[in-house]
Length: 240
Image 1: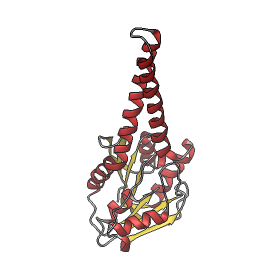
Image 2 (image 1 turned 180 degrees about the vertical axis):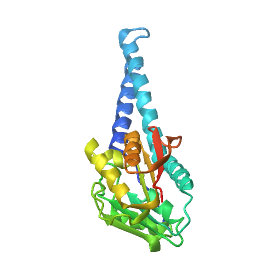
Image 3 (image 1 turned 90 degrees about the vertical axis):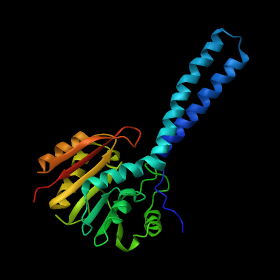
Image 4 (image 1 turned 135 degrees about the vertical axis):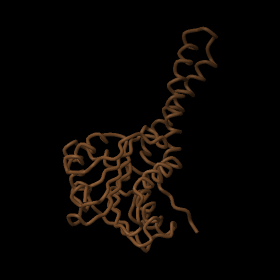
């Protein structure tokens, strides 16, 4: 049986950093090789190698996050929700289904809904078909639904979801006003007594403030050690 593939996040950024690393390190080593020791050209070669190494390390850490770290972060965040198993869970910006399918595994009597616009820039080979294939690979296709939709205007009824989750998606919304609209939409569709859980690399403090304005109690707003760049995890609860 094929294994699930949750994609590479920010593939263009990783590719750019890898190319910069190769160019700087390669150029620096060549300059050192063709220059006399102690010369200005040799020193320039040394100077180029260090930023090249920094780009290489960053690219490798981001790649490791996509391949391994984000699954650990996902599991830790879902553990915090302590799902009963009969909920309806929404994954906002589901991508390949990392959070969506992780939640579905914990919902033997429930269901999971994923919504996405399927951007190729934010995640490599992103598509509804890829997510559904992952659902089959994970053995949860019977309780997973995937829909085209914009997180700024969720195609769902008020108070129709028990738990809303999102991973590394909301920061891609381009403006602060639109991100505020996204959080308000998430708040709108979550039932009283429901929960929200978010992983993201930026603006998480803004999400927490907007959820508080919507009447949620923020239970967790801290760093997860499993994703690079540094990523925050947010958990909030709507009182019953």
